Amino acid sequence: MNTIHLSSRFAWMLLAAAIAVVVPAAASAAQARSAEAPASSSAAFRQGSASASTSSLLPPTVFAARSLRPAAVARVGANANPATYTDPTGDGGTAPDIQTIVVSNDDNGTYTFRINVATLTLPSDVVVLFAMDTDQNPATGASGFDYIVACDESNDSVALFQWNGSQFVTAPASTLSASDDNVGVTVSFNRSDIGNASGLNFRAETVGGPNPAAGHLDLAPDTGTWNYQLGPAAALTLSVELAHASKARAGKPFVAVITVARSDGALADVTVDDVTCAATVGRRALHAGSTVALGPAVGCAWRLPKKSRGKTLHASVTVTLDGATVTKKFTARIK
Image (cartoon, rainbow, N blue to C red; front, side, top):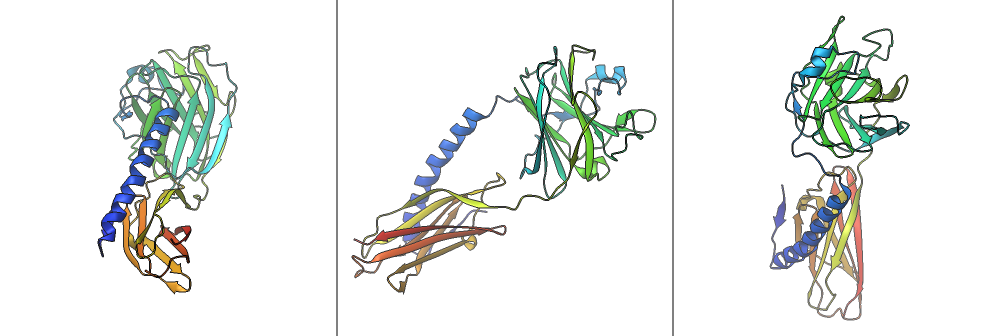
């Protein structure tokens, strides 16, 4: 929850300064995301009883059914323990050509798979598959695979299949989600959906058209599987994206504002309890007249002593959030 603590009229000045910093920053960030992010489909994948196979493993009737269930957009979290797997290009035929697969996890055991392709038309008659050997035993499952995630690009849908000893059947997947754009698909699910596997062997596949066959599919890797193991989540760090300070004038308020970013990509939702304001003029410590926290924007205000002209002001704004800390220091000669 955003919190504003008003202890004096400085807070209103501080809030205005914070907005002046945050709004342009938000606009710039939005423009950057627009420039960098590929065009995405209008809807998230839907979860349902599914339609695809890792080509030969799922029954053809299921592959042709193309009825998958609604799901939320794939979650991309801290990107902890990332691993990138590269597939040779130019071998996809009519199917999207797989280039790389990036796998990561969070500290709750959620896997995120990002399959990057040369191009992906949305919508299109394409199925993207992830086959997983979750017990890491090639002697079990179907050709070693215990689970398959199928993403149908014709109708934005996704489903999880599990090998039951004789065939793949749809499996409950309360955490499964997926999203797509014109250069790939992202799939996310918690380990609880795949037998609490702490690691797995996997293979990805794209299929173009209703009949998976040579010239209409791309396997990654071309032979065998890749392996991924859950790892510790990266420690959260904070950084200062923008900083602004008013002019330091004797007898006047001095305002310092910063915007804070989290390394995990989540919004830094700071409260005043997360903020420490400190300032000195010479050897005299100043009391912060106001503290403001508005989303990622944080500010402090102090009234400078009337007889401080020519002295040096040392001020700092510190944010501590979820165990991570960042400090921005300001130094100015008072006029």
